[in-house]
Amino acid sequence: MTIASGDASAKAAERERSTQLLLDRARNDSSLRVRCAAIKGLGSLKSSDAMPLLLDALTRDSQSDELRQAALEALGTLDDAKGLPRVLGCTRAGFDSRTRPVAIGIAAKLAHHDPEAAFAALSPLLKDREIRTARAAGEALVQMKHPKAAEAIKAAMQGEFAEELLWQSGQWLKALGAK
Image 1 (spheres, rainbow, N blue to C red):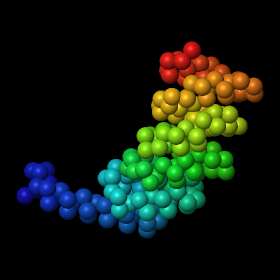
Image 2 (image 1 turned 120 degrees about the horizontal axis):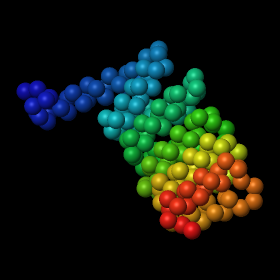
Image 3 (image 1 turned 90 degrees about the horizontal axis):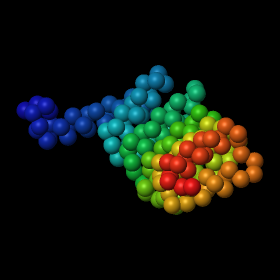
Image 4 (image 1 turned 180 degrees about the horizontal axis):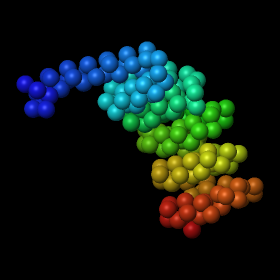
């Protein structure tokens, strides 16, 4: 029986072969692009076997921080509560300025596992010195629909606030139904 015909054992065997192939490529391929694609593929397969590799990839530096970003995307697709604290860690200052917004977006996707921890980590980022990080934080709070999101956005708008974000903050408040 073929996989297309619906044989469950054949599908499971093919899934296992695919997982092993992707794990091998993610660990051993010399091409960064192949490793990143394999990592994203593991997330798409929702393979729990991949969690250690994904968490390890968050610690690896690479050109343009692509490996870490691929691991973040895979963790978002995998949607496992164990990934949220590590994703939130990648939102902090010190990470690549392109990686932090990716981590913030993934944190919003995973926030349902611990909304309070996600809110506590993301709301201060509204006042981050990196505009794309602050913008990503606002978008994440809107996506999360946290009950305190509007309050946090309004508070961030007080005092020193990036001019580019004032209009955007109004849009976030509208999206949240706040006045």
